[in-house]
Image 1 (cartoon, helix red, strand yellow):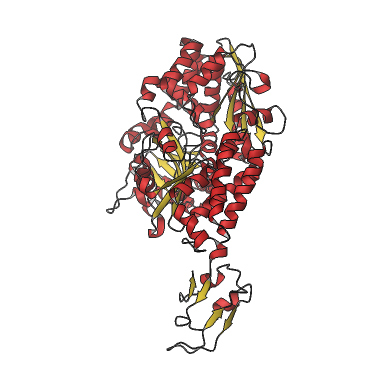
Image 2 (cartoon, rainbow, N blue to C red):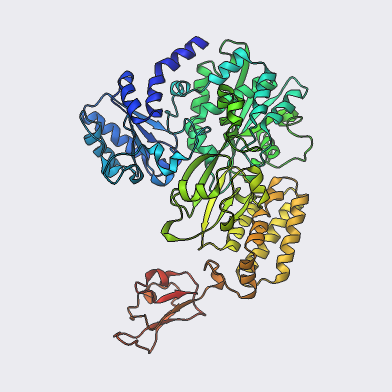
Length: 637
């Protein structure tokens, strides 16, 4: 493919993409130029797919055919971000945001909205996009979207994820064209360096410096790698980029290859991401066919190709040297550093490795310039950050905000607050390697340095919201169970340390802990941080140290009072029946799996039947009695 052919594709598809990006009034004017009355975008990301969005698409196709509608374009996209409302369908040019769609709803939209002369089906719209008077609010102006700034996610939910022409029309490969025609490798490295972009995969190392070191390293063979082995519990940022805009990663890796003198790239993606893997395969095949990967790219004399390597789901392979060891065909275990990968990496050659979100920022930096990118964010943390917002939050989903946005803005405004009237207790960032931010620090501006200063870290971008019903000792135990299971076992501090920490935490949650155990936890944690071989072991104690620092009273309550305030730790719970409230219906006894509930001789005033009581010796603390009592006579203490 030549540059002229690339420009022709952009021109041919540009109006389609413009309609989806413009506000309603502008899109309506532009829509006739596309040849379609409506463009219907349905989320085909993993979240919505699991909620049967593919069945919604099938029904919509069938309804359009049945109604004889041939001027509506149906597009399967990546993630729109507001995963709590999936499956999502957006109809342009109106920008009608239909939420929690079913096949029946899709049929209704086709019959009432997509037919000629039809109108928006307001009862199926996301409630946040409807005024009290019934008028429509553009979804970009809703609380969830209006404070976001989508750079890495710019094309997710906008383009057909498996159509390279739409990707090109949306701006992909513009940066590659610019680099190969008007920039030297030194220019590219300087642009990335000047942008202030820091790696989005964990520690936040400056991306430009990594590229600079690899470029300066000697050798005819160099490699470019993408870490798509996203393994943090609750994290799905990288997966969504790959599912929604895979070409942005291929383009960025090719640019990096040009910058450092590499001709081969590898994307290491976990096999547990089947949709992302399939779309990467499609994208790579399309890019090769178009001459955007392989030999003599764009006819400009540069060669670069990319291959996939599937990971088996080992968390440790998120560490760069373990990932490279796995690509080489060995068991995924970390290697000592130095030498660092920029000097001696994959197959012993100079290598740069960045994660998916980092790669997704390269195109805008090259196209719009380092100065533009560095104007966003804070002094030492430039640009935006994508967070997977989950836990006890109303709007579960993906959010991308400028660095420096406060936690309060993310939780209360974008996230919609804590459901069921519960109070915000903490936010856990950085996954198993991170820490907890307590309620008193909710106004902290989120960036790399601020999070480290308060005992947490950015990590890859998981942000789990915790409410008042969360036990902080139990949450630490949850993350330790994960890291103990995922430790590769190569180094003793991590292999043994995670097990010992888990044993001590389990002891405390069972009411068998002592003050001495807290001292042991801190000692083991410090040894692990200072002597573990890789970041898995070095950071595994972070959730414990963070909660010990901010919520020490909960640990002490477990130890001294054998009490779990949140009512989570089973061993410390007791279930009782208030005999004055019990009407003697027997629902608790009939459903008790341990036969621990029997009728007493006492009949409460006003009731006809004798009440029931729980035998604590037989009770297994499953909570079934509490769930089945309609009269709130069962109490958990």
